[in-house]
Length: 306
Ligand SMILES: Nc1ncnc2c1ncn2[C@@H]1O[C@H](COP(=O)(O)OP(=O)(O)OP(=O)(O)O)[C@@H](O)[C@H]1O
Ligand SMILES: [Mg+2]
Image 1 (tube, rainbow, N blue to C red):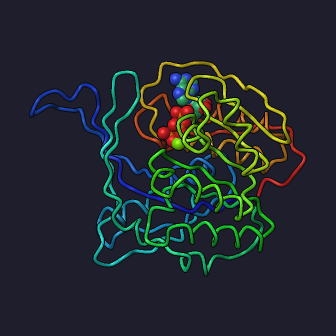
Image 2 (tube, rainbow, N blue to C red):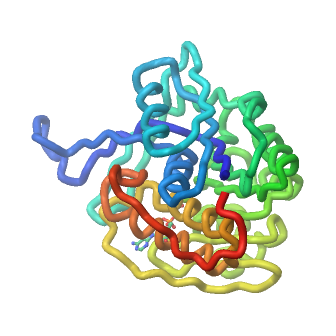
């Protein structure tokens, strides 16, 4: 079981071909949220996942929970009264890159008490998206996730989610909180790694982050990712693809890497698991697995899959 804590939102995708006032197509509505996406990809990869988050007591909130459950995710989602469900406007450019503006809504209410009644059995990892720190509980969410990971002997993994999360918490405070939490795995993208370290060269940034966590997987779009642990830095390339929509690529990468690690692979192979899952996520609109599709991971196993 991998427990994923953080954001869930409605994605409103503005596609590149939306040009005029009335068109037959050009907008797409999908379930999203970085943490919820990761939970959905973990379930799709065949490993149990539980998503912890908050939605509004409204129609979109019901849709978000129903869809997670349909995607095989167990949900510990609180419906918050007097708050709208979170939503994000995603402007997709022709090369698949995005400009995002969000209204976080009920996600702001996520609190350590939301973690209080989870069944504490067979956990391999607790994963948190950085967006979880933007709500009213701030860094207390990280401390609560850390306590749960320790209690269940699970690894704690953290995706900073956005440069703006790093800016909003502050580099010093975030690094100190991560170190204190005993985070085992950091999953930043290139911008976040640079923001967290002040280093431009990604190898230097990854090496620097080993002072915060013993394992780092640094994602860099179609470029090689960096797998760093115990002072060893490996460049792990992927096949560059023409992306349709990179929404959720990093979230899918996290899922692939976490599932591979739960199955006992080393960090380099976890990185390949991340690339494989992310490489699929960028080939269509939205950040979640496509309904009706299946995947059987073929990792060499030396550990438990749950
Ligand atoms: N054009 C591409 N071709 C192949 N793989 C890609 C491409 N773009 C992204 N990926 C895959 O997605 C992974 C994550 O990409 P990226 O560096 O964009 O993360 P991210 O910025 O965290 O994404 P997100 O914004 O979805 O969180 C990469 O490591 C790679 O595996
Ligand atoms: Mg990301």
